[in-house]
Length: 201
Image (cartoon, rainbow, N blue to C red; front, side, top):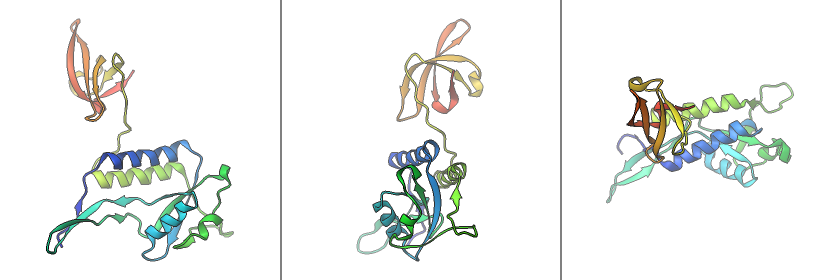
């Protein structure tokens, strides 16, 4: 078999990632960490989700060529933290750690307390974990997507026109590109930019 290769980032991956970020940032879930039995990551995740709970395991998307009569590209993705899964508990819905303990494939719930209560991972630490996983998968920092309307006022942050105000004249969400009119020397000059090179006013 050939060496492992990274799978290109897809829109589906970005949507899943942004959904997880929203769940962590905008909800009051308690995130706990479980250790699963050997080679039971997928089985434990399925069992936890069947209970109506949120299970998250950061994955590194990889592929490899399998030799045979026909050379086939197969999925070889692997967890960043083998045998460890993050579970979000919604206390307002009466979800508790006891629901996780009985799930198929779960070995134990991590605890660093004398009374054995589950260790709670803070939301900001969950965000850092997800951002580190995204960077490892894509080789770039995650940028929170921005959405623009025609006629909206923005400020340019790139070196050539840094600080100049502009008005959005076209927006290509798929390519993350904007066309803006920049006021220079008393007249509008059209400029095309990446969305990362402007900020909302």
